[in-house]
Length: 143
Length: 143
DNA sequence: GACCATTGCTATTTGCGATAGCCACGCGCT
DNA sequence: AGCGCGTGGCTATCGCAAATAGCAATGGTC
Picture 1 (cartoon, helix red, strand yellow):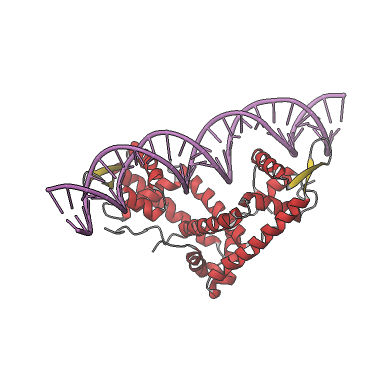
Picture 2: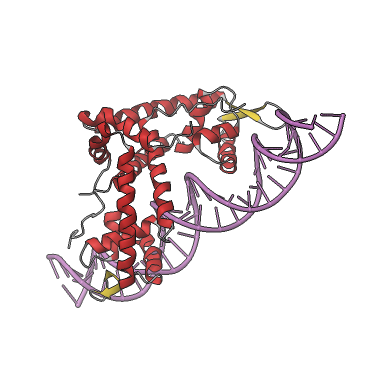
């Protein structure tokens, strides 16, 4: 008995969205694992690099990661030697990439660029230009 | 100082896909919570209803849920009185919906139907018909 | 009848997110 | 200047989904 069971959910948009996101995530997770980076690491490093003197809370706000969850994440990045904190006042610190962090970031960027290219390439070209606009419509972006 | 930090990842398709999926998931989770159902519950119940005498492993295979993770999930559904097991042989059992399970399923279907409608409605109509085909291209469907 | 894959399960771990609570600091208000 | 509210950074803990390892027993195949 092979698979007499059919996926009756396969035509539900929400379900298919979830499956697609999962497949994408698994792929990217695997690619980043080869340089010992998690997706959340990559996201935070890229946000730090792309903004000037961001604080932990600010990064958390853009990425929708709560302060409480930023703490251990940043601790890992710190321990890995990729970021460092530079006090802005007695309360908050700016996050900065170290030399090692910059190097790691370049490796990450290379992987991401290739990954996003591969991703879009999988979408038949007649649908490709509609992909991002459709997704934006579903993402409740906080401004 | 409001939010001087911009989301530099916002143009990456994979990232936006993930954000859209998250928004969708959060919405559906909330709607199903009102009838005390989790998304995974709903998925399993719908698969059981849509196939004849499926076993736990078969359902797990279509939904990509490992056997080990099916066990506690089914235990919950069983405890809730929504499913029951009918032995096929001494090794496997067919999963069946109870009366209560059928009733719950109807409530689930109502919510899902509405949800999927709302979801598609958010997508500007010029992109709408491209949505599912694009996602299918990303989902490595196991036949 | 023997062997091997499969079934259903327990137990444990990891990743990610959410909640609650803490202390200290800054900022705006009067 | 002083007060108080909101915020920043953090610890600790929980929930959920998924993954791994291992196990006993069965079914199917040769």
